Length: 338
Image (tube, rainbow, N blue to C red; front, side):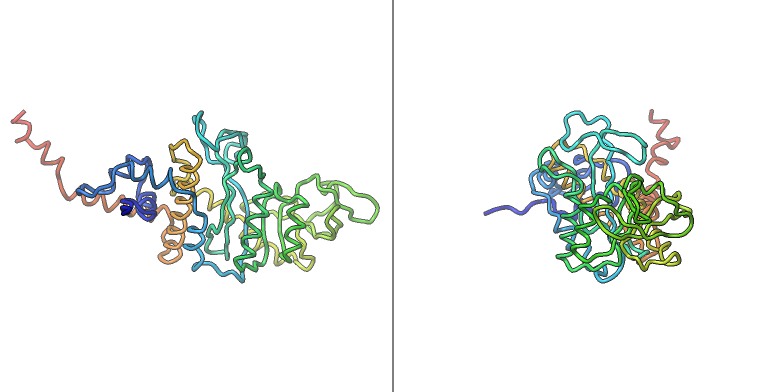
């Protein structure tokens, strides 16, 4: 008869929610209690290193909190820093927006849903082309297709200029989904039916222009300057999108940057010390599920991820201060014994 595992998903997720600095499996075991049934660190090893990653678990948890018929779907990737990982699977050289340079790390591609308030991950992929043979655009189309199968009908799909290749744009058109993206400056467009030129070479100014995107069709290009982003080339296949209506979806598209920041600062997505690809992928998925809990709590209570984690440590500090253990240990009576 098979014995039940001593550690379940929720045990590790709760540890990620509460822990502040140390995120090793040994630390997780130490924080599990001091009873006879306290799991050893091997139990956490089995949880992360021997079980196939389950993306469906993330979707089952987040599905009740998203509205499939509205909002934006946003795709972007982020590099998880691993500067000293010489023998760790999945680690390679990737561009980092934080460092503004190519660094060693693991590349995480996320698909998130937002309504302008909540921002929740609904799918993700870990870049592993040497093993899977898939590049970022393949993952882009796979996650979009999965979202379609799950019943999403978003107002727009938004993504960075890196994903604005014709293959991805045509895939979105096949699904009858509108898109909104930053456009790479070297995309060829024809603004006056004379010749194709780089989009950076056409005059846009503060007004939008409808142009022909080579290999795709008619699109509207414009520039947006906001408090959180420099003026940049944007494009959409929604030719009816007006200047008054495009600021809000562009603002919402920035939500994924806050998601990446919170994932690293509060959910320990970069902190897994395991070498195997399976353990790294499981840890990343648990980190995303940790973010879901913190984000849902933020929407319900108004407390940020930082405040929620700080409350946990404040309660521990308050209990310790009231106990007075060290104060008694350093009393004059204790010194006289020494």
